[in-house]
Image (cartoon, rainbow, N blue to C red; front, top):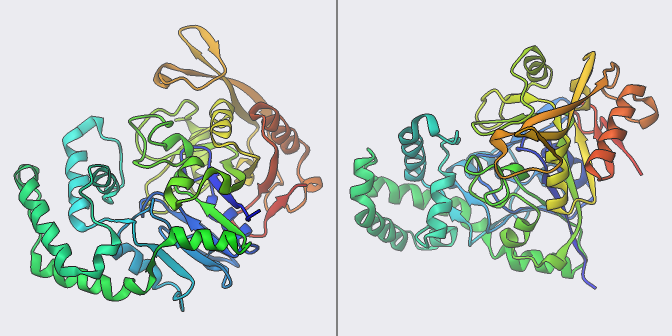
Length: 418
């Protein structure tokens, strides 16, 4: 029987701390593969006091022995990828990018920003990085794949035809056709840099598993931003859940092994959309300050609130999580009381599941006693007693075992449970 790939998935609205856990686990894996999203996502990893901000390259890049795969389900900005690659030496033979992954070009970013402006107060709150337009074109079968960098002249011809078909619409939106000479030069530069890394990553992933290599899969964003199962329309443009890993890498469901869900000990959200447990008062502000809640990609302040056990239970079931990693427990240090949402109220009725019409829901909280002294703790026995009670009750509420607890941003400040 061939080996199976383990999977890391975000359980909230992204920014849960997946980067740290992937980095921590990647030290024991032969390969780490990214399966969806684009450079709108960001993973922040601290190692020995040094900060590494990753947007496209998998978090396994900090393990010098691991290879890193960007799968077909990712939309890739060649410009952003090349910029990110410059942080690292000797990536050849360690980084592989799918020839089937779709490209984000500058005009996709212009389209993204123009559409957000047209939506005015109904804007989704995207990063303006061109993610949505690139995925839209992929589904419309008019996108541009990385493999096309192998023939830049033919690619430029396709872009010319694309603007003939869509030029009138884009002109009305204030988007001009790019200067094709400059674009040809830019695409040629992209090709020169990236072609040595572009390959059939599905075949590569199959070979790794057939050779009994240990493979770790990582997604971007979080479950509640999933295009089908998230808080639509305030979602991303790809499938962020564990099932999306199969599509985004060319694996079968039988290729998936352990699924680890990543969740903060509280909750945050970037951009617009419903957020049942958001705290707009002093506690929410304090969570943001103590948690340094600013987006890795955008720098935008994150909205902050309390742990939503209903949402986490939903996401855990949806992803088939075998276990959970609880991140940023230390951020809750110093609070006298800590709230956990244990049910929703809609039209006077209490429910224990996440409805489609989540806008009308109100949180029903259980209040826990706070604690101090969890920062940097590496053993369960050394945690404050109230922190233990909090975690044990969360485990019961979400019906999923907790296997990892992060107590600071540093890689080694992590409690690993049996």
